[in-house]
Length: 117
Picture 1 (cartoon, one colour):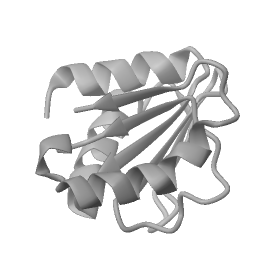
Picture 2 (cartoon, one colour):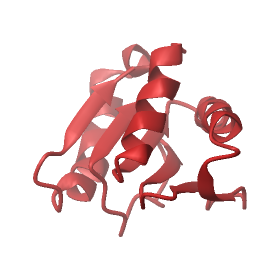
Picture 3 (spheres, helix red, strand yellow):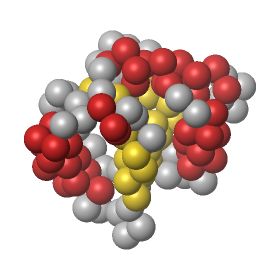
Picture 4 (cartoon, one colour):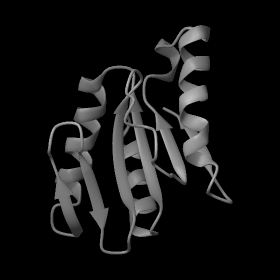
């Protein structure tokens, strides 16, 4: 996983954006979450590590949520940016199913963005 993913998430949070991080596996998403939490340890408003409800909230109001591709926790969350980790690992069917789940999260944003990483 590229350092640019971590730095990009950090910048988006500092700009008050709501970021979702989807891992092909929950382990991959947790690894990135841990790296972002480590980088933002001194600047984050709140870091929540409760299993299934991991979240980083920036002082500027940005939020980072993590999901696995099978997660039903995507429902009811609004995002500006969706980062899809290991995007090349998905089959066409898996990617299509992910988009069906994820796209409603981006509907509320006027400048939503999907980033395959």
